[in-house]
Amino acid sequence: MSYDRFLAICKPLHYTAIMSVQLRYSLVISSWVLGLMFVLITLVLVCDLDFCGPNVINHFFCDLAPLLELSCSDTTVVGIDIFIHSILIVLLPFLFIIITYVHIFITIFGISSISGRQKTFSTCSSHLAVVSIYYGSMLMIYMVPQRGHSLTVNKFVSLSYIVLTPFLNPLIYSLRNKDLQSSMIIYLMACIRKSVL
Image 1: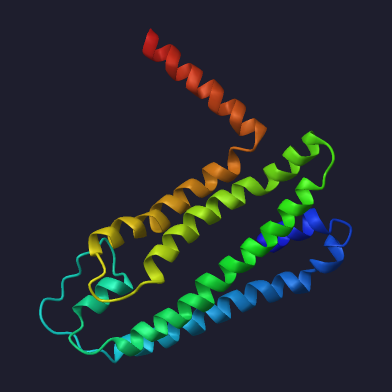
Image 2: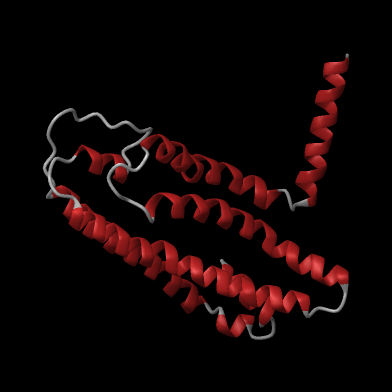
């Protein structure tokens, strides 16, 4: 999405030529295939682990870090695999997003009118907010997958990208819609009137 915003803001005249249907399909298919491949490698490594003792995970869902805590075999190979995949899946796309937004901000500051800057920045602000919430929590959890990692902190940080980000996504993206804003104001005013009466 940051690449789409980058093309729309930094290269608006070339947007339709660059962002072709073929490129869109290539981006979607490569995301699915690479995601499946990386998860499959980790899954095979986790299936080779031995689990003994109580098989109760101290977490809200079956996440990888608490699952590795239950293993009584050596999880060094899985830890290295997770770290390498974290760099490829989390850090490299995050750096790509940062680079595209640096170019976008340079372009925005090059716009002479203040209203033009505000309008251009508002097209990116919602995506930037969601990316910040999502990648902030992901980096905190998956870039440090070692034993002894505080599971209490892990539980609550993982809630932010499992529950909070999908919950905020529609709100953040739809609050820019003028019809939704006016409907929310009318609804809130009606609720206030009912509570006063």
